Amino acid sequence: MLACAVLFAAAFGAATLLPLQSELLLAGLLRGGAGPVWLLVAVASLGNVLGSCVNAWLGRYGMARFGERRWFPLKGPALARAQRGYARYGRWTLLLSWMPVVGDPLTLVAGMMREPAWSFLLLVTLAKTGRYVAVAMFALG
Image (cartoon, rainbow, N blue to C red; front, side):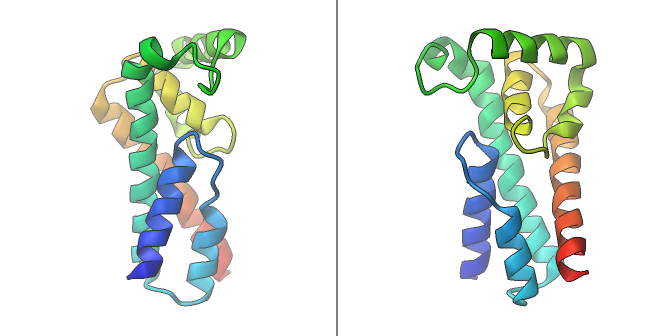
């Protein structure tokens, strides 16, 4: 199903540090009847969670290699602020990983702070899937 592939790619890209949008695509596909609600929400969630895993991997292994590059998103004061917040509130900040602007850096910092994979996946999956369920409920009203 082409719609699922496009949705997966958009959700994956939106979760990485790329400036992409997946919620409107999901809403449009749902309103257009492109597939079962559960399938579209699952595809979007899977793509978005996997994109967040890329961020965590970059945080864990890429900071030493790419951290000083101009294109790398977190530097200096912003990075220090994110690390302080994560150190203070811990893994529970990952429940905010669904949010625009702050969610992607949170997953990057979680990788930097060596968050265990099980808790990262659990909390990010809850957050991201919850957002897509809310989008589906809103879209189908």
